[in-house]
Length: 254
Image (cartoon, rainbow, N blue to C red; front, side, top):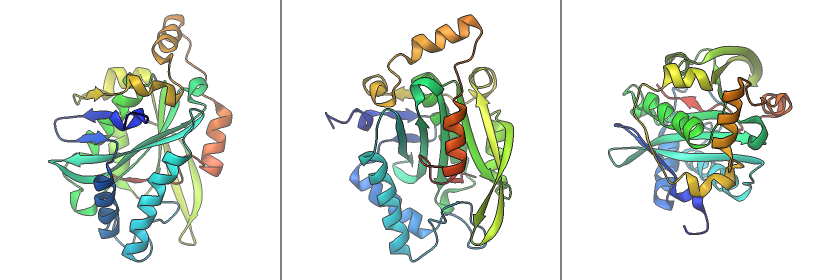
């Protein structure tokens, strides 16, 4: 798409490719979500988007992607990419931010179809999106929010060097749900998290849409001075209370 540079972004590992979804990709993702993302007895998502008839769930997947695209601004965005393995859409991976030009902070969310879990694909998708965030966009920090009982996604965070960054409590299916927040700083990503090779494509033409036109220069300046870019406490507080730009932690990436 000539007038939508986000459509050219890719991040490839030996196992998966993250890419902007074509209409066919998005239709396949919707069908995958309707097929099943988690066991019925455990709800990993705050919004409970997987509850309901399969047709309802499929439409929610489509509407989430369309809504993010329609409301995109450099000050408030969520990038939803499909995870593709052997030519097949197997899940979704996203990163979102508010005031990224200032905060240099992104929130990660992800899910894989139930039948694609346990194959190591979630780890490769995480490696790809971290490379996109840090190397591609110049992020200083990435964080995730994971239900405490979601042991597979908790393990993925630990594997990539995320450190515990507090907890939060939400009502899920009428019950108290405790989640852990995990944070990865740029230095940790550079020294411990880059153990899967990733090839990025199409990022530079889209930098202005992320508010990241000067990402490389600002990142280098902050590192040279030994001072981290501001983390944006106001944006973070808004995220964890209202969770506006990422409606729920989509972590089912065993």
